[in-house]
Image (cartoon, rainbow, N blue to C red; front, side):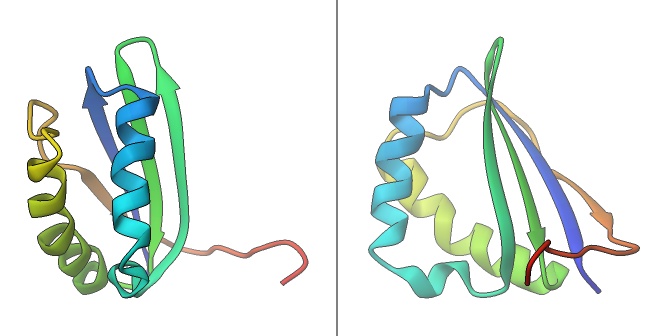
Length: 94
């Protein structure tokens, strides 16, 4: 079952996100199961929205991503991401 995930990253800048994203892109298999990803600047940091093929894919990504984020100095407050079961999704033109 697909999962919609929302994570708040207070205090994280778009430059920090871009740096981390560049590191993650060096291992594209880390995104296995990611259907869509959106990063949105907010008044206090960034909001991340993803759709994953399953909760297992989302958790596997988190386990691989966190050490990379921590090595980049991005381990701070923000709490656990919220995850919701998806009833339906579609991609226009796909």
